[in-house]
Image (cartoon, rainbow, N blue to C red):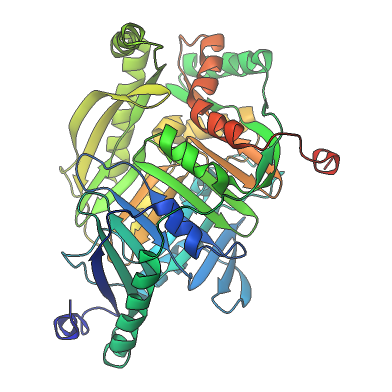
Length: 493
């Protein structure tokens, strides 16, 4: 839109997106991210295979205006000049104020995301969204509960139309004064992007072997306790996870090309801030909002992929007719309906797809879709509070399941089981569930996966599910890792 067209929104919205668009058939999201990345600055890339309901996009956030981390009730804010402040304060009103102060109109010719908050809410953030008591757990890695970047400049690529959209959000009051300069800066950025045709040399990466935290005997004991809770009526199902730990040097970004190629998923991402870094290929949406419509996509029920078509078809048939898997999936559909219901117009929640078979690189799942119409005056943060964590990563009933998880596992999940994506200034949002990922804090590298425990679960089968679910990310990291071991000094930390 030109300046005259944008003027119509200046009285109703405090901020305006200024954009330019151009065709680029050889746009490579990894190469573009490399070209503009500054290793000592935050980095955000969200890409992936298109969902059936919309065009696929890659989003790269440039030069965050602000960074926010939240841990144990303490907010740390860093502005673009590097000034740092700390406050002990509830986070929800802070985020809502930022989104309201930068609210933009939703323009039909622009991509779904053109500026907003990007990053993650951890599984553990749920303690701020409920008045119920959740047990305190060990936090040896000092993981943040929330890590977000305020992005007002976005590179977006439409995988279907091959159109690149460059957007810069500015204050409406500055439209006349800054429009020409903003267009000029976007055109300069366009020329820089058009000169990027190949990936640069990837950063170094090395790691030790992964080791599961809980052995099979230890896990078997935990399953027995979980089953007793089920028989006692405390829960119907619970997701017990088993983290794998290693030490690393270098950057997880080195494994991005391999992981993205080997694990086509709706959400492929890389995020870095300070000494935290994550890389993943998540198949599962926690929540998407487009205008007034909310979507959540429960995945539950898992089988590994077969070595050939006959075996693959047999596993698929077994998955789709297994009473345990069907019961678990139906339970989590109901939990998704209940979660959406608390932020939706009465009577609008409906299941629009039911137990479809979805095949990924290493596993297959049953997937459903639940939709609703968002209620009036519900904010993006309200929606996060209602849905996080997804039932597929906690259990049912959700609070009771989380209490049992905390008691049995006694360690902070961090991003695993939380959500990652964006909360747009235009009111839309898209957050995937934090699964099929690796994250590191300093030299400590973690890959985590979970198994759904019900009354008839067999521990050794559930234990194998950890490896099936984690295989794609573990394989990508292992194949990327440099030959040789990390230094003795690193191992002995």
